[in-house]
Image (cartoon, rainbow, N blue to C red; front, side, top):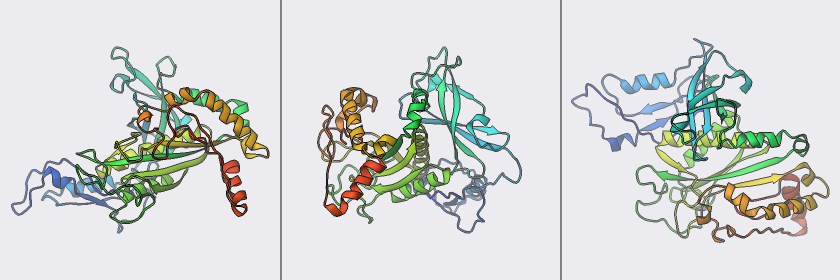
Length: 397
């Protein structure tokens, strides 16, 4: 059972008959309302939340809380499926909800659906219908029960993948028997930054000002160094509940910046899991009244940027003689360096400067390292048996 703890939430609510003794609730005050776990509630299949706020005479908030916590399982076989897809920018996630007659176990049991592509930058206004194909299912940590999150990709009504549908081509590659025989492993390290809602300034930073220089924040603890841990922890548990192969999380170098890791995952599963995890993170920050950004360099100057590092290996790389296979792969990567960088997303020229733990965006580089004899076997296992670090975003092995 997932119980998401979000530190704050912003609401707009009309109270029709205020009590004469009640303190007026301003828009700023709504931003400080807390959602906390209802520890007295009986554990059921639904996520449980409790609203702590000034309550009106007509108990509007009480009724809302009851409906949010309502477990519909005893009353109907129907479930709610949240269809999720990638929008026109290539980094935004969109979703819409649909009632399904009964619980499902596989995407093939779900109907295709449609949406207005002209509203997401994915179709012209005079021919805007886009069709969603369900591809992967995860448990819904927000609604609980048998409700699900559904990762979809997008097609024209004629069945052609739309230009922003990168999953279709990836699925073709990963379904090739030669590729499947290599059992490609991916480990993805997703960095992100949390921003204050109204000012779009990192969480924990003084508004219009700067914290102390980088150094004490990475993997830190303490109110003066770690900002947003409750969001990171809530996301961690929600991903585990959903069935996402999340393997860890940590505070990053810039204050207000975090990272989590997904994998090792095989083939197309890696992409489905990272996108589902991003959607869940968007929803949690939405509840918390905090802005999530994946911008490569959210704060200019002497501050680390944020990337999505990809660790990768094949079966041949993990077997005896695998280092030679790794070196051949590095050569192939070097020959298509600019192509890979252009596919990695916009704005990386601001981050990949050769400073702040990055390589220069125009230069392909790689390196190996050795340590003392006691640690050499461990390093070999980490890098060769587990996955070599082929950093498409950082341009280094």
